[in-house]
Length: 483
Image (cartoon, rainbow, N blue to C red; front, side, top):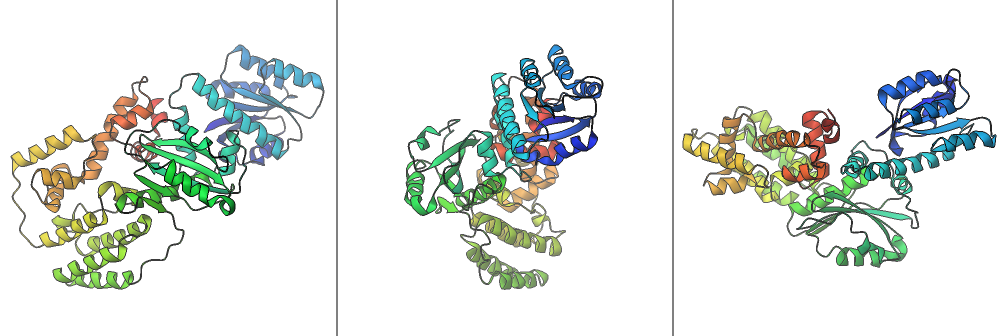
């Protein structure tokens, strides 16, 4: 997010400019207002905003003098000057001194949007030219954040992409190998479809496809079966128009992608909005709760088996809802049970990363109930050390807990219990903690890009890493690096 200071000797004018457009959607944040040139200069020296919008006629330093001071001190701030006077000499002088643009008052919304769009593109290129390897990645984190409001149309405008078709899809594709940074050349050969490609993981590409669904549905199918023929999993968002938020389309495509990963027989999944819940699930949940309350193992196992079949093929965000209802019941009736202590609430993406399939989820749940009531198994110190040594030496690898259980000939439930007793936390939280700690150390080395850090600590999805890091550290990786 680029920071901007608004300067005008009339506070109501400065306020009006701050409210004229949705700055955050354009990639900017208004961090202050100043009402004379001298105050503005002090603010710029202290906070170093990337952009300043300033009136020319002001007490103290006027806009031209402010621009001249910024140039003399070599402050990295781009200046857009505004004036109610249309004399050509002002524009000439401003541009000669290095102003990014010159606007006439009263500033119009469309005029400001056009200038800000060009300024964002200029600032992005400036960072790339300066050799910032993380510039594009940091922008991507902000664009795809769940709270992001940037629309597809705004995203295209900011990158100089001219919309030519009414329909937009976002496709997330996972490959079995590390992808190239940009594969747009593969799409450019199709004149009926415009595409923009973002690399969102070491082996993940996100495609924004713009096409006319009524006229070119076949071309879309050709693209998916042709250009994405080597993708192992494909998630397709719902169709939308240019006014739809980019982050919501990415989120929908990601749900579809994780659904594809969760069900091995579904290589391509298309996101379905407001998909109806499978019939009978509510009734089975009621029966499961009754069996839990009465401690009837056979009833619980039967209900879990039925739920597994009812949920099979369900979109993963919906399955996460069912799964978390089961977890709520476990916490309600088995809060003290050692066999279920590591069972935790999970989001759809955490489910896909924790379990290889829906069968693995229900196997874990069933095993937990089977162990309930049995005496605790003895913990062998040598065995615990061997397991922990293996995990500590392999935590940057993509190893599922089930694979570790098989390696050491342990049941999944017992291994979960053992790890919880040894570390005080779940396997996934322990691995995450180790990875975040390593990432913090690597980020101190300025020669290592965030791309490299993500991959070195064991993540392939940049967006997922950014969310985890921010959740655990309180800052994004790029902001942590600047401390």
